[in-house]
Length: 53
Image (cartoon, rainbow, N blue to C red; front, side, top):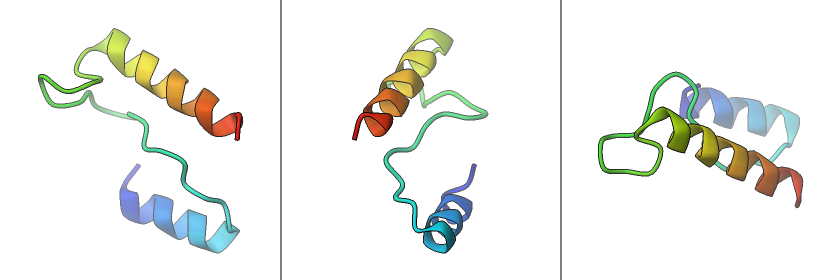
């Protein structure tokens, strides 16, 4: 999802954006989330963290 779309939804609903997650691609090589397993771990960690607040 594009950052612009997320910001629009956030602004219109009043819901804060906690973190970006990977949706349709991996991170750049050498960064966190640059393979499938790390991408899933990143997403799960950030979703859990966001729901815990």
